[in-house]
Length: 142
Length: 419
Ligand SMILES: Cc1ncc(COP(=O)(O)O)c(C=O)c1O
Image (cartoon, rainbow over all chains, first blue to last red; front, top):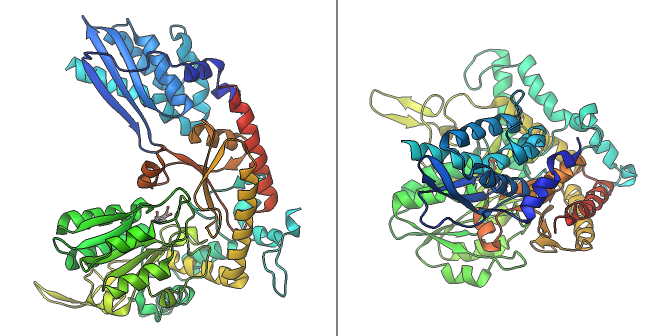
């Protein structure tokens, strides 16, 4: 297995220069995500207006995969509706778990995480921020 | 290459190749070339242990202490013989002082429930160290919360040594128990147990020693050590998972309450009350893990054949060799003492996250561990979320360590483009 399939340029780039790093002021939702296995941790904060994610940011520490994944995620869900964000969550989860073919057409940089499915111990890293997002979305919709 | 390394320095030189040949794990085509540096998590098992397990199942599978037929007698005999081997191996005065358990975690829970809950009261103090595995921390948090006892923590310095002055300061007539590792599973530190136990006994406190990491690597004698409780896991000492032992001095076990209740642990039963069997059986309720205990006995036979002293020397040589090599790597930081330590080395390499480092080494077929190693208090004190960890055992070789070190250099190179 070629390690570069996992550590793609896009991933390294986001790890080095994370986007939307920090906290959203006056956030509507703040959610904590933890991976007890490796101690990685992120805090995700969001502002939602008229069903649209208007602002999103993350803080925390962790491996390249978890940090890059959080960074790409924030870029990809900003401006999307809650419905679209949820759909991306489902596509992304399926892709990194390697559960069948996923159409990556609308996934943009998220597709860089395709290689994760060959590294079962890293799936949790890629999903850390997404699982936090899911909790946030569920909290927001009730 | 590796065959030239001898593990047994005395009469018949046993080479590493001789040792490795006896571990089917290393002989499988799937595992060819795998460099296994995670024995601190669990060790591989020699054929002799697998045979003992298999023999029980195909030749004399029967319940112990129950049947009046030949194979049941044999099952009981072999189980009790394994107990005697464990007692002998750690220098216990008698086999009755050995309770078979699932592992170190269960053994500490036995002490916390069976002794702690009945002997601790509000205001009593337990001295514990910041380098304990969660297995030797969480049960005491539970016991403290339930009894009102207080946990007092001994810290450690940058070189991974316990803060002994702090220990002496904390020790007082309120101290009922000191619970301490014999070898840190993160730092490799071997605390000065002789001093700790002497001081503890002088104030009337008991001492529990977590031997999960020490029993595999150094000769242990609980009587010379004067430990009150001593615990270890079978699977780290070449035995099966689900085997292990709790040692406690006879007087302690006799006064200690059972933790599990049911079959086999009773002496007499009436409608509302019952009385307990003798030690150690009063602690072994229900059907026990016979093949596990018997397999552990076989692991001890295997170790005795090579000699724990020889294993100790081999592991120490490998550790010194690895430490020397690792120190030559730029930006590599070792957590823990540089001398007089166990064969488990925690480290970090520049800004590379341990998880990424472990994935890199895995891609080179080198198995190390990354994470907090069930020792979050150590991580807090070191101010890191996680470390990488390599650990060695009798089947590891210097050429494996060369390969490991070479690939640490490669990892540095690979991840350097990230900075
Ligand atoms: C120092 C120490 N104590 C206790 C344990 C717990 O052992 P087990 O999980 O076998 O019960 C371990 C194992 O990781 C250990 O390294």
